[in-house]
Structure formats: structure tokens, C-alpha cells
Length: 263
Image (cartoon, rainbow, N blue to C red; front, side, top):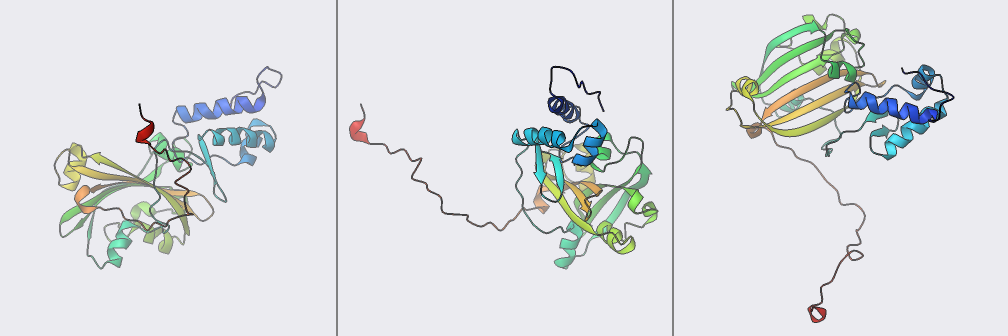
């Protein structure tokens, strides 16, 4: 935490705003990062919670942060995102629901220090390791997704020994470790396959791929798992049930062209 100039010309809450902006621009607080609580920040800066709240409110009004009631304050995404579902369900569970048989190949599974962005999202201190789980899932010997998962092992000691060619990740967290998964955030992006992804999915370089990132929280709000998933465009389709809201007044902004007044 930086030193606060308590007698300087710049107000304290503005100094805190400047510090928060630096955390975001430097990547220490990546998109979707959950900020420490107002109480924790107030203690770190040795200021009142009201001062912290004022700084957060200003950044929220600018669209830099977003506050979700009961869940916390997060760094807002710079990409427009469309929520597609209200139910947290794994892709493997969707296959099971459809009675589709699949196979899972574990490419890599080890405890190691994750990239800085991943560590921040999982609220891990520098140098603290996480489980890295790399898998390819196939249907009828055809790859349908390539998964790279990072799991905070403090909630599930020994998870690196689980045979994930047989057991699913959500299943392991819930049944073996008795953890209650609460909610998650998903983002989707259409990309082209590079050489590595094309090889993993048995497709051609530059083929269309749907890329997903997912951050999962326990019911108490603790981040437990972050995943990166690549799916061939031919094996993935988005769908959503949408509802019409209140009746829109489309006449108030309508411009009517009258040819008789044209010159």
C-alpha cells in the first residue's frame, strides 16, 4: 500500500482512486478481480470505510468497477458481455444430461505457481502454487474442448492426486471435498485457432474457435477455480431464453421525413 499524504493538496480518497487505477492498469487487478472488502481496504490505508466507499463509488460511476450486491466489488470488463444462463453447469454435466458419452484425456496435472493474472483472480499471494489441470475432452474420438483449469488447493489438499480422466472437477470439489460451489462468471470470445489450439482440437490453424474464461466462487465468496476453455466453432452453439421488457416508446425519438418540406 502507498503512503497517504494526509496534509497534501490532494484529497485522501483521490489518492486511493489513483492507487486503484494503477492496480488495474498494471494488471495486478485484472478484469473480474474481486476487490478486498471495504473493511480490509480501510484497515490497510488506515482510513474510514466512508473514504474507501467514496473512492469505489466514483470508480463505479465511471464504469471502472462494478458492485454486485451480496458478492462484492469487481474490476469491470472492457468488453461487452451478454449473460446467457442463470444456472452454473459444467460442460461435462451438459453432456451427461444429453446422455452423450465422452472421454477425457489428462495432458498435464501438477501443483505449480500460476501466472500473475490467475493468482490475482484466485486471491493467491505471490509464490503460492495452484493446481494446473490440462485436459482434452472428446466425443466419438473427436475433441470437443480443450480445458486448462487452475484450482486453489488450500480448499482441497491432495487434489493433484485425483484421476481426472475418470472424475470430473466439479464432482470432485463437491463430493470428495464437500465444497459448496456458489456462482461463477463466464465470458465468451470468438477467435481463430493458433497452432497449439489447432493441434489440441485436431482442427486447422485459423479455424473458428469459441474461447471461454470462467471464474468460480464458493458460496462464501471465495474464488476456488479459474478455467480457460477452447471449443471448435463447429461443436459449440450459444442459446438463450430472452424476455421482452416494458413496452418501449419508440415514437419519442422518431424523426419523420416530410418530402413536401424538402428543398
